[in-house]
Length: 510
Length: 123
Image 1 (spheres, chains in turn green, yellow):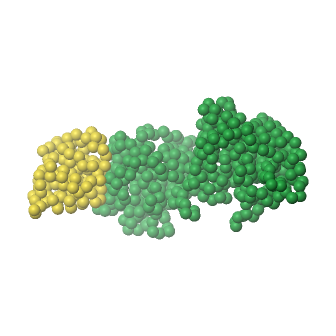
Image 2 (cartoon, rainbow over the protein chains, first blue to last red; image 1 turned 180 degrees about the horizontal axis):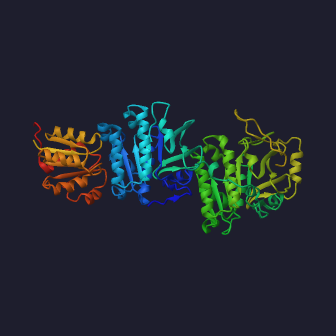
Image 3 (cartoon, each protein chain N blue to C red; image 1 turned 45 degrees about the vertical axis):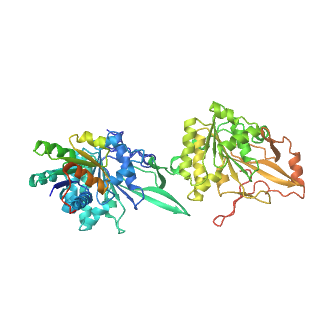
């Protein structure tokens, strides 16, 4: 039988076998339940239903796929053969395909019901897919007749303990009496934002247990359907004690004077934002942080802009031992092109990699890759909040970078509202011009739950990475010069102005 | 005129084969499941059966078995399916030929001609 699990009320969860969907359904469908899967043509209903059937058959169940006026079986099989879940060994012994069209055409709803009953019993099906509910609706003489069909179908599925999935394009009406009758309703949609499109799944109704609410993106690839539950609904759900949990242990950034400014290093399990203009030293500092990895405390570089080859080349130039650490397995690198990504896919990938590799040091370079992947930019802070909480639970110390839009000038712009408020720590890197030279300055703006030195320090980049000056004289001199153009006085970080957002100001000292 | 019985439950499949074979000069009977297929066999002289594998009520392998038991063993059978031939062979080892779905019109005509000769299509 399938890998099912009964709850305390006699309902048995049967996993769908679709990555992510069982998480959304909190375990899967219920035996004997009737569920409508609704979506426009091309939304992915047939692939999803086939995938569930093949997985069900592989898990030891028996599935029956009944088509009405839909894609021909042969065409459907041709398309399924290309997908990794397709397993011809399960057909016809555990997965069977028949057409219900003739029965519906010749004997109406009664004929179709008779066929479904007989075939479910003949094949001892524990899962039934009826592909083309709209054809049933069209064949019904009235709403009442259609409702009676659904009612009888539901009673029969329950009696046979058979899960039934009814696939439909929706009807031409706004009124859907069947939705009130079935045990669950799942919608598949293709949502456009700008020129991009994203597939989204939503469980609108699910009797018997909760489900992860809202829309969850999904992808159709050679592996079939993969659902990515929204990061905010899955990760970082902390109790009050966990929320406040920050250990006393400190983690070195690799820059001794910065560690001193931070009060002995980054607090283990916290998330710190490196904010600065392009070329200000954020990636170098992150690389330095990664270079402190060990077999006991492995590190992960999660980046969008520097390819692994470029990252290694830069580390060689800085004489930082990333290649050795990578070869020893103490450093892992995940690189994704910043284009056409999916925010929730990235979030899951990050946490899964941290989990699988036992990562303790994480450098995310940079947050712009997440922002470009976001369907709604306003989601990024809450996604990062969820990820930060999840990383804290796992004692992962995280540095991530965010780029300010201005190189020098009277203000420092954070790329997104609310972002710096989520970080436990905030380190600002900036340029100042003095005479004919650009100098770099660094300071700690915020370290939640810990004391820190807010002094401004000049730093240089060279062998070994970032070298933060131990005294503040040069910084003071640079900032004291009347001719210097400088960033905003610390504590006045503003979000990059956008038409839909007002600049925000951080509270002093975080 | 040679007669071919096409048995398939899916709307459109039997109709397409019927049109292809009638153009080739065969008479074509159709049925939507194995049970109906056996009834057609009992009613008319059939020279060849083109038989789907998965159908309601009585499937293709089931009908083939019944044909052998009920005196129709001599009628050649072409099994057709979207499944690989090896899978179908296991289900229906006594079939004479196999037609993979989706098929080309020429493949249908060729396979029928090879088993029962040409139809009576005008030259």
